[in-house]
Structures are given as C-alpha cells and as structure tokens.
Image (tube, rainbow, N blue to C red; front, side, top):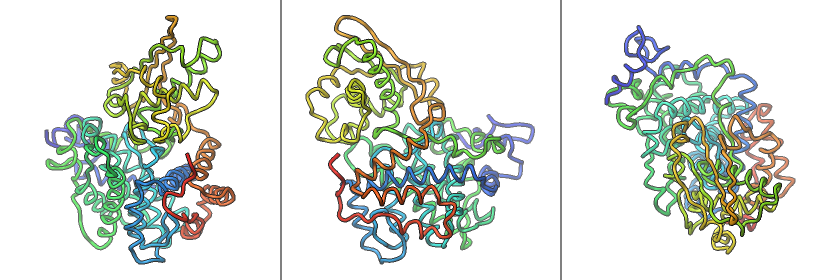
Length: 489
C-alpha cells in the first residue's frame, strides 16, 4: 500500500493530505514548524526529570557486562572533548554512541505508550553530546530534548502496531528525535530541519530478531539511532538535503514498514492546550520490560489483598493466570528464564517475584532479576504455577493502555482477581517526583556511587535550566573506577 493511499484515509477538502497539512506542505514540513515553537518552563522542567531518569539508568548500565564493548571502543578515541557516563572524557562522537548504548541495559528507561518506544535512551545522550560540542546552556539542552521527544513520539504513534511487529520503534523513531534535538541545538532553519529529519528517517530501522538471541544489539540500535540523527543534522547544517516526503511518499517509511500507518497522527494536536508530548511519557519503577509492569502491579495488589484478608501464603497458591494484551505475550511469555535479560522479559518470573515481595510487604528489587535469583527454590516453585494468556479485550485497548488481569487460585479453591488497567508510572498513575528521585538514588547506589556525589548530581540535574554551560553539569558526573564495579545486587 503506498503512502498516497495512507494519506487518503486522513483526507479533507484540501486533497489527500492529513488534516492541518496544506496542499504544498509535506508532513515533515508541518512537523518542523511545530518543532520551532518556543518551549515553556513546564516542559523544560519535565525534560530535566527525564534527564535525571536517563542518567540513573545509564549510570548503572555502564557497569554491566553488556556495556563493556561500547566502553572499550569509546576509550580508544582522542580524550578531553566530551564527557561519557563512564567518567572518561572522550571524543564527543564516541561519547554520543557510548552514552546512547547505556540507557536501556537495565530495562528501566522511560516509555511513551501509543508510540511504543523509549525516547530517553536515544534523545537525551544525543542532545547532551551536541550541547557539549556547541557550548550550549542547560536551558538550550532541555529545549532540544523536548523537541526531540515531540518528533519521536509523533512519528512513532503514526507507525502503529504493524510496524512494531517487526521493528524496534525506539530505533526506528529515535533517529528522528535525535535529529530534531540536534537541529534545535545547531539552530537549523525550517528547511534544514526537514532535511535532517528526512535523512535521519531514510536510514532508520532496527529489527526485532535481536530479542530472540543473546546479544547486545538492542543497545546498538539506540547508539546508531542517536548517531544517525545527529549526523543528519550536522550534514543539514552544511547543505546536505533530505527527502521532504520521507514519511508519506510512495517509497517512504510508512509505505515500506507499516501496513496501517496513520500520517494524521504526526500532525494531530499541534496546538495542545497542555503543551508538549513529553508530558505523556511514563517513568518505569520496575527493572523489567514495560509489558510486564501491569502484571507486576496486579501481583502487588493481590499480595496486599492476600495479606489483608489472611487468605494464605505463596505455598498455598495452586495456580496463577496472567491475562494480558498480545504484545505482552509475544515479548514476555518466558516460563523458564535462564538469564537476567530473559527474566526481565518474563511475565512468569515478574509475577512470581512481585507476589513474593508483596507478601513480605516489599516491592521488586534489582536482585530479583539477577542470575543468582533465577534458580531460588521458592521463586521457581511459584513461577512454575504462572500461566500467560491473551485477553482480546486488553489487546483491543493497546497501546493506549497497558493492562493485565491476574487471577490467583488458592489450594482451597478460593479465587482472587485483580485488573490493572494501567501501569504505575503512566499518566493515569504517575510516578511522583519523590519516587523518581528515590529511583535515581537507588540506581546510583547500586552502581557504587558515593551518596554525597549522588545527591550533588541529583540537585544539579533538576537545576539544569540554570546552567550556562552543559559541560559544567557533565563535569559533576562520577567516574567509574573499573568496569563491572556495581554493588552486589
């Protein structure tokens, strides 16, 4: 199906253009106009929270074995140009790629639901690298991040679930966000921004095959998306033009990669009363795939019910059923995980550890998904009683809502059930500022960073709008003494 056919579905009297797009404009041109709008203080403050979240996840990510290859390559570069999360000053181009590879390793990166992607791990490090390169201020960095999130989310929600079936949306759409953020910092004009977006999109991708194998390709997707977007913006500043109809053209992204793409979703709600789309992004409280989070929340709710009613303990549970949407089943139906990555993508393991923690009056911890916990007897015993099935009703509301229904059958025949309509951290159930800061402290502590350094950087990150130079803020980043120096978790 061609891009022109896609456009007809959103057509109005102006022809086969999406609503709000004039006959002489392309979708990317309208998007570039949106990105040129001024950023308000609320959006800038929100962006600082996402920087805080990215930095925490990346700080613990850098000391994980999965980061070692990326760190080794970065350390081969010329020093004293840009700051990497690992603490070294390396060539800014290598710092960009290393930092972009780190944010998803712990599976605690931020998420936008309807675009089904994680903006932070790509956009934040891309923006930081360019900001350091051009000597930008903290406010300029945050403005760029807001614009990057806007571009990524708008294009991601247009691609839809048919694209997500085969493509890693964070990678596919992240390059657009990196380009938009870099264009903001480089102060590109509208035509240059369109070229940056068009060229970034022309090289976008990221196939899901990597999630079926033990490899570090998911992190590489993020690094390459950041690299592609930034490079496209730098080249646009030098006059390298890109395809303005990259999205809706007959051989464009929509036609090539999404059977049910909706160009209207790129340009819809341009004048939102509540501002920029960064406000719709969720924060993740648990160290697992987001598709497992509704089931984790449901397990914690049922554990609280069990404790309140004194209906029994884990040993009294006969069977557990997780009913959830299809993508959660596709990604996270792993009854017998053998690695940390598999555990984080296992509904069965996530529910088992959440129930056990909840029954003890606790919440899931990093160690629950570590290799050392995968064969613990009570975890295995409970995990083996968990089954996962699709609920077509919950599939029908995805990706607008990430939901799960948990049913626990006790040995005496009693049945407890809980429907979790949205996951904690979503706009309906937001993670508080205090909760986000606690997550930051927890991840920095697990990475082996001293408390005084952690607190200084936490305060400084939330005060980013006040910094005259981003490099003054990155100078506060802790130095990692050696690879894999995280505390035992």
